[in-house]
Every structure is written in structure tokens, then in C-alpha cells.
Length: 74
Image 1 (cartoon, rainbow, N blue to C red):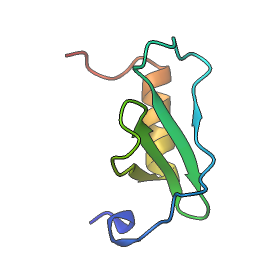
Image 2 (image 1 turned 120 degrees about the vertical axis):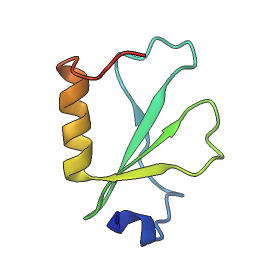
Image 3 (image 1 turned 135 degrees about the vertical axis):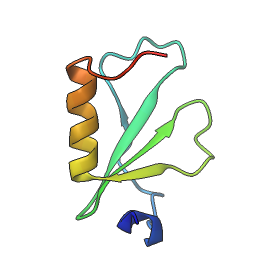
């Protein structure tokens, strides 16, 4: 099971940032580091929803796949 799922993390003061490639049309994802555990990410359209979290290794794998255009298209 995902170890992060059982951890409570206060993201009130998280340093959220968006990609420099964001087009400004509202379809964005923000990310924030979670010290010692990984990263949190959320949809900018509804910041009130809980953020999803991933380990640093899982996030690095995801970013590498996106960068390589290796994810399946719908």
C-alpha cells in the first residue's frame, strides 16, 4: 500500500508552483514539495479539493514519462 496515503500532511503553507509551460487557460496542475516524503499536486480549477500526493521516486518516474511523451493517449 502507498505509505503516503496514511500520512497527514498540512499543506497550508506549501510552496505551490505551476509549470512555466502553462498556457493560462485554466487547465493547470500545481505542485508543492513535501519535505522528506515527496510531492503534492492539485488541479488549479478547484484548489479547495484535497491535493494528491506521490513519493519523490513516483513523481520522478511520472515526469520522465511525460517528458519522453511515453504516456498512452486517450
